[in-house]
Length: 146
Image (cartoon, rainbow, N blue to C red; front, side, top):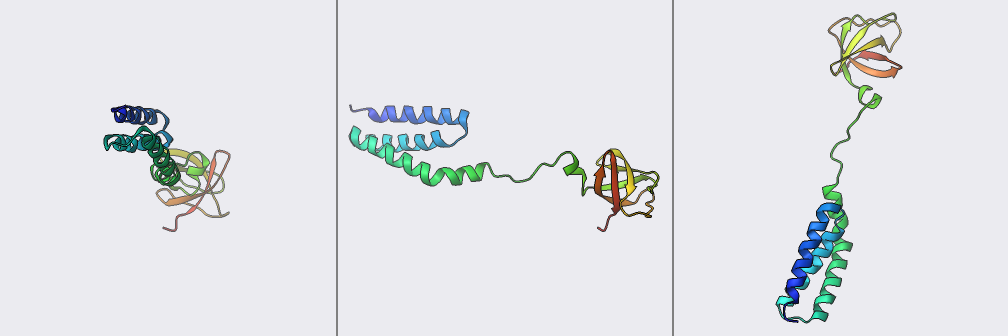
């Protein structure tokens, strides 16, 4: 079979297309093996040499390249916080005077009922504060040290 390399290229292309749908890098590693097997076929290697090349290159690619590639492409560059996790520690602006009885702050565009985290503190409108804790629908805030 003089043109087995063509079938290896077709297989490599099909595996790359399949990889687009899976995102696991397994099919991509197999495609690398098929591509190198096609090169061996063009160079005149027989079907046995092509099969051995496919197996060796695919195995090496799976063993050596898959993990680093997966880590690189699927790394977590930042953590998206939401809910209370996003509010605690956030900066806020006092809208209505905050004391032990009442108060309101703006946290990221939203108005929240607020109380001082430290008893006896009074925070005036316009002051920058930091959310220390959330209890129910009330933010406990303290003066921002930054």
